[in-house]
Length: 380
Image 1: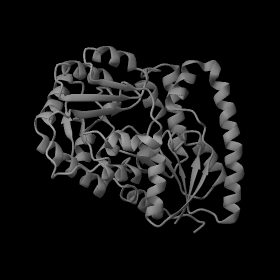
Image 2: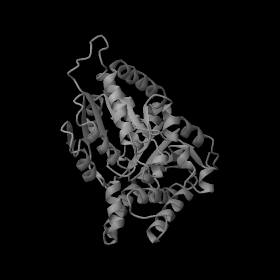
Image 3: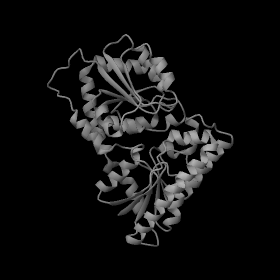
Image 4: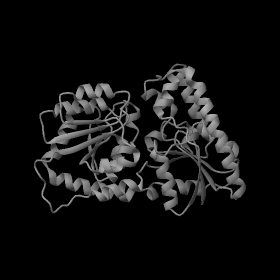
């Protein structure tokens, strides 16, 4: 099958698209990328919606990218028409252009994040009001133009309009091969006894949104201030960064990194014992399995994350789960791992093996490939 990966997606900021492309190629499909990155993070897009006078800048940048996409897409269509088009993550507007350019060709929209859900999570809009209605319209409009709607959990599918839910396929986020390679490079030597002077190394990587529950992490860090067996690395900034840092202040064993280049991130995470997932109590936090969970497992870390229905279903005992928003339970889970290094080592190995079987790129795209392949179009 010949795919056209299309849109303004940015694989450096949003690795989900890279995993899908990597998985399709690993499965034997041809993938041609027609990509003009918009170079705007989710946070930047949300900021524009908070400050509507900046929206013309978004429109201008989008139009510039679209002109490049249209030229490249027409060239590919004349050369060898694709069998299917994959519109990458944050493609709410790109799917409109794809539909105009590729009439009669199956289009799969990676609807990993809804506009309405992101706006609510970032405190941009509640369930009512003009902005919330606008976000829902953007979602519905995008979904109508897709033949296959790619989501990551059944719970996310339950939020779709009925007509879109009929076209939905669940594709786990997964992790790129670079994460598995980093994990293999840091694989511990089980013959070497643990040095009791080496603390349990715990890392969190994220945007500090309510979804992540970083206030809970901050409270847990403070609770562990007197336990010198555990050290933390916190990577990223965002909405709840200052609050998290203030809560964690009693603990001196925290390294704060505002930013780490994407190319260095797998090796950095793989050098830690524990990778933290999400601990938020928002509605969105109950529906997702975040990218960092898959990446942490692939990197050979023990993943500690919240005990929610989608994470229980996806992880099947390969991670340590704690109640959402419960800082005490998170602190206890980390103490337990610091206490029992044999358990820590076994969880690292079993988690990475589970991820290698279920969450490698070639594994996660199989349902997507089947769904698109089963579509019957007149051009075939």
